[in-house]
Image 1 (cartoon, rainbow, N blue to C red):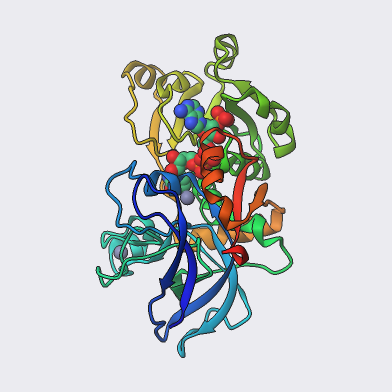
Image 2 (cartoon, rainbow, N blue to C red):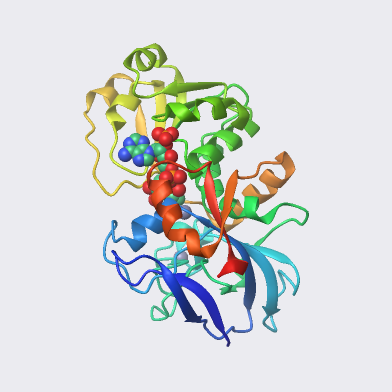
Length: 347
Ligand code: NAP
Ligand code: ZN
Ligand code: ZN
């Protein structure tokens, strides 16, 4: 198998730099994809900087992958050479455990093989992600992508899209459901668009006043500045569901007060620091906090088809590979509208 051109982090403190990546030899059920675009997810930064724990360096991050099928193994049925395909946060799972059988591969007891900083099901081969010219993936974990869409705007659906679609769907969001989206970044802006496409009345809950004009354009009914205590008091008890996408420490307890009785705050943001939550905001309003991790493969395909039908795409700023490190710094300052997508032809 030929080498791919990639960008990798060699340590938690080193900037990402070009690297030649030897891909695993494709088997009969594997697909080789020429990557066109890869989104930059905040999880990439948490991982390469060791914020969630020790990493297996070098790490080629990237799990919002879209491109064209370059080669297929003899037994591949799902796609053919020349088709568009996507890869999200997983490249395999045990496929036998209770969760895999339920289509919850992300919760595989195996565990699942995540797209990077993880291992294949052989528990030996280290996985490497989408800041690369190519990836090899089992056909079961390749997603079908409809033609005629701008691929750079499709890429972020593979993580930001499914991570927000899954809890919105699970909670039965429909016309009139009052949804708060906390943090207007890559995940947040997808949550707004998808919830609005499901018919929800969406309120953006943001710490950045500069994002106010975008809320309506993205499909929200309202924008609320979380730093303004008067606005927070006014919104108390008005939301059925909050999708919390914030990547760092923040006042989760304060946000619980915005939920109506029986409401749920879904934590998708993965702050490395713990949150302080008292008993009373939960008890008094019979409120819940739940976590949510991406979505299964069948649900990811369902999300891609939903987004294609409803014309939901990410808002992206396309960058060249040489600008990845600068993009990380800008994302950390909430200075991206709303996802960076790497043009992988520049690797
Ligand atoms: P992002 O683009 O950086 O967006 C995060 C947003 O949160 C920012 O734009 C900002 O929004 C707000 N924010 C950031 N730091 C904050 C702080 N300390 N206090 C208050 N608000 C803050 O990141 P992302 O790619 O959307 O990812 C968000 C989080 O989700 C990350 O932790 C990521 O690892 C996690 N994630 C989880 C899953 C999952 O399956 N659960 C999947 C993907 C990503 P405002 O400017 O509007 O305040
Ligand atoms: Zn992600
Ligand atoms: Zn499994």
